[in-house]
Image (cartoon, rainbow, N blue to C red; front, side):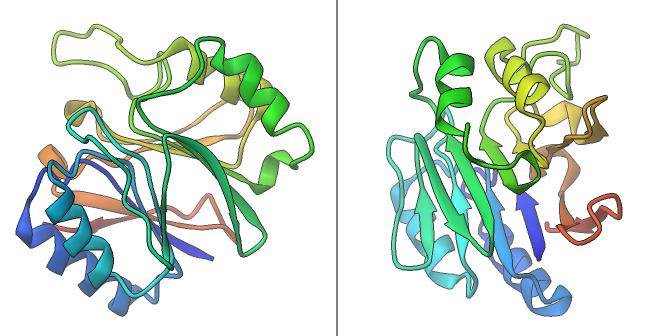
Length: 199
């Protein structure tokens, strides 16, 4: 399954055209956007235009979740598609997230979990220009314990890129704001990550 991973479009009209061009050219199966749409109108236009199943989370600029027949956006929920479980976590999640998350995913195999958050995990692609780490320890604890296949996030525009943890989780900061790019991850060959120009 080929997944296009993006985040932080911030109401950019070119982003919608770019995403749809990549989906068509690269034969994408699933589209992920890890938040910061800016307006409900923009999110509505984006997801109505995308021709494949989509999964999203609200970011710090967003006030709601957009859902339709082919799009699922959640602050704290799990959706299944194509044999994978998309674990979506936005702005509102339990205080003891790492414990609750392990309970919620107890019966799901690690290599079948695609973890989507707006914010990065602590210490992984979460560095500001100043060098300070600002990621969430709760997310870092969860991926260290559960070892999901993939963790998709954004928010920290200046630390775009991907990294494989010691536990084997592929972490992708796919914020398009500075990079103008996203990533394509193929679940059949997760190590062959492809960077693509979106804007």
